[in-house]
Every structure is written in structure tokens, then in C-alpha cells.
Amino acid sequence: MSQAQKVTLTGVSETALLTLNARAREARRSDRIIDDPMAITLAESIDFDFAKFGPTRQDIALRALAFDDQTRQFLDQHPSGTVVALAEGLQTSFWRVSASVPDAAFRWLTVDLPPIVDIRTRLLPASPQVSVCAQSALDYSWMDQVDPDKGVFISAEGLLMYLQPEQSLGLIAECARRFPGGRLLFDVPPPLMAMLIRRGVWTSLRYKAPPMPFNLSVSEAADLVNTMPGIRAVRDLPLPAGRGWLFNTLLSSAYRLRFLDPVRPSLTLLEFG
Image (cartoon, rainbow, N blue to C red; front, top):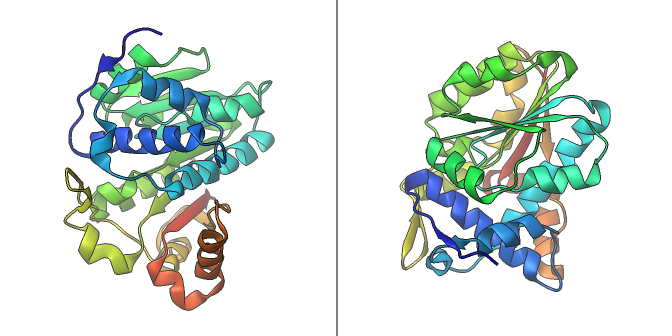
């Protein structure tokens, strides 16, 4: 194995290391809920103090699985379509998805800031299916690189909560305008956590996650079909089942009991008309 390379990221970009560590640690478990060998390889190629993030949680891996599932469903219907991974960070979704749809001729567009793109270019294998825009997702020029004719699936995993509300809603609106017939999948924290997470959350004694100024309740997300032009349908998606009876009982109750909507995260699929 080649020597691990030092990596330095700050602010929101550093959360890419947190989520990578969570998936890699989950993938190493004998009772793992996600098969992610590329995450393990990538984490081992990085010289970084991952322990500073504190204990890992399985919900990060479950979120990745939920995004994978929707991406595969899209590619089943649009095998030559384009998947746009906004603020992709150190996700390894392309390798998980392409392993299950090996014959699909889809295109994958990574959109992220130059420091993240530099790490991905140095430490992840290249693929002719993958192209890159080294820029902010809020620089809408990445949209010019997308051919909408064969279908577009936009993934905003772990992105919108770190933007200001007007930025998140503006990005959704522009995607709806530019990609009729496309889809956008995003996740945001529950509104009852808004006051806590607005100033950031300590995950350990040594790490404080960045502020998350944007959130939507389940009902607010559902109402986007009425308030935002170009949105044809809104689907509230559950996380897949995880590990452990107690975890799964609590998770299923959160989706079954409507009064718990304000305290659970939302995973929202938008379909553009």
C-alpha cells in the first residue's frame, strides 16, 4: 500500500472526511449495513486524525444507501442519463452504483470546490463516465455541462442544510427551471433541531460541526409542489432499515407516527414537470 497522504480541509468541506470515516468504519464491520470497499480504500489512503470526529453513527451509511437506491431507480429508467452529484465531497457513490448497473452508459458529474476535487483526483481512480466541475454548486454554470435530453438525476446529499435558506431554495428553483423531467434528491435536518444546529453541533470534545441554517419540515417540503414553479411531485422517502431491533423500532415509529414528523430528518425527492 502506498503511503497515506495528508489532507487538510476546513469548514463545511471538512465534513466530507467525517462522512467518509463513518461509511468506511461501517463497511469494515462484520455486521455492516453498507458494502463500500472504495470508502475503506480512500480512508486508508488519507493521513488524518479521524478520531477527532468522535463516535460514528449508522444513519450516515443509511442515508448513503437511500441515495444509492434512488440513483439506481433513475438509471433503471434512464440508463444513458446524467447523475449530478452536488457538493459530492468524498462520497464513493459512483462505485457503489456502477457496480450494480455495470452495463449502463450513464454519465456522472461531480460538482465540488477545488480542494475537494484535488483530493478526489489524487486518491480516487478515474473513469471515462465521470467528469468534474471544480466549483460551488451555487455557481450555476455547472448546469451548462448537463445534457437534459436523456434524463437528469441531481443528488444533493448533505448539502442544502449548510446553505442559507435563500441559497437552498434558489438552487432548487433553478434546477427545476433548467431540467424539466429531472429529479432532485436532498436531505435536511428536522425543524425542531433548528435552534441547536444553527450554531453548529459538537460531535466530540475536539470537533464542532458547521452551522446548519436551512431546514424544512415534512409538510414544508411537501408544499414545494404548490409554492415553487416547475415541481410536479414531492415524495417523502424513509431511510432504509438499519442494524438493531431498537434502532429499527424507533426509526419505523418516526415514519409511522405523524406527530413525530417535526423531530425526524427528511429525505425528499422532487420530480420536475
